[in-house]
Image (cartoon, rainbow, N blue to C red; front, top):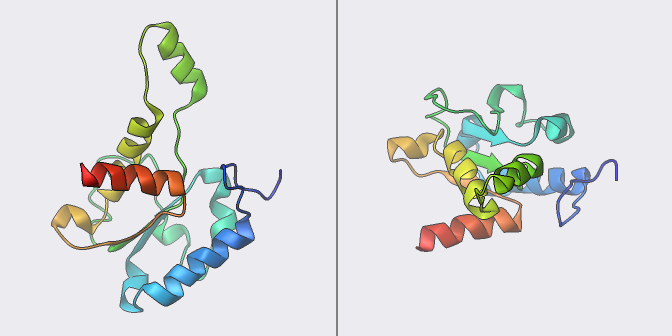
Length: 142
């Protein structure tokens, strides 16, 4: 399964990079290309570098408590986040239940909040994972 994204879609890296480049080139203004914030899992990071996605605008998906990126108006959330099954099972054995969708939503909102949205500004958001998009849309519609 090398070269594949470990997600239900099994989209390969080349296809994902094409989608990212399409979004960047056709939907994001030239001015905004310098205001991109993106995240993915660390082991996928080097597979996704492009002319605009690099270490300068990468943010760890679990970064907390920083205002450093509050000027970023474009967020690419390239993760289909789920709770660690080992931790989830341990918590379950202690009587604590974890909802994967709620956990995923919390993680995604935490990262999105690092952007200019915290200043009340409009942002562009790209989420290629259908599952993650649907979780966010469902939450926004409640």
